[in-house]
Length: 124
Length: 157
Image 1 (cartoon, rainbow over the protein chains, first blue to last red):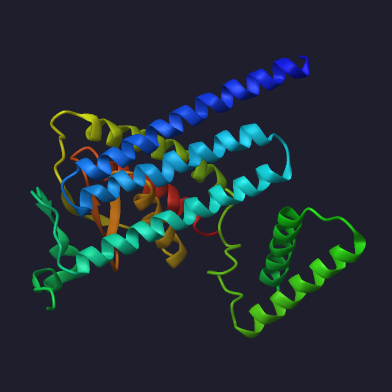
Image 2 (cartoon, chains in turn orange, purple; image 1 turned 60 degrees about the vertical axis):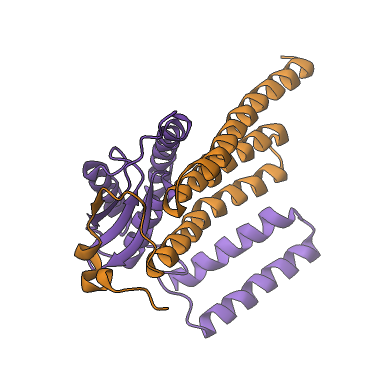
């Protein structure tokens, strides 16, 4: 395969990955505006910082090829994979502790997990 | 001792990967800085299961790729909810039992639940997690049990 064809294939592959990743980022941003409360919006943010961000990174890896830049991109992806759920959990836990509850909650088993703390009114 | 060697190897691999230098003088400086970091970590009693998780099975890598597939699947499900004309959300806070033995296993399981769009771990208690789910399908207890079983397989040798 001559270098020009390889370049073309690489551009096509990374273009597809960028497009799909960008679509997920857009859907996530759209969900952030559209969903009703903080709890459901967390899930839209989850789409952005997992699939969206990782696919953009993969697209960049395809562009970079077998270089040191790809190694660094893999490390960024790995750190994102580990740290973004921690940040999401911190936000969710803070909302729960502040006494915010989801709107139109269908099923609530929080009493089973934390006992009578679930009925406690939030501190003023 | 194994943890010290493991940390040293990991630190030097990171140094090499991020710097990309192979000159003898700079390599020596890299090794020296890794050794100094190791000395500090030892003084601070950081060489435990949490900082150097050598007790995890190599199957963790396979677990991550499986988790990646699950993340894509549930991201697709959440995207469909967002794009639907009448968003079919039914929010729930459910109790999910966690069967892992070690603290590291609990952390991996809780983080995996949060990483999957559609579910977020909100609070923990001994033996169970409080999980917020966006839809009825996301709050599938069999799915959580499957994930928990896979985590229990990789948590310790």
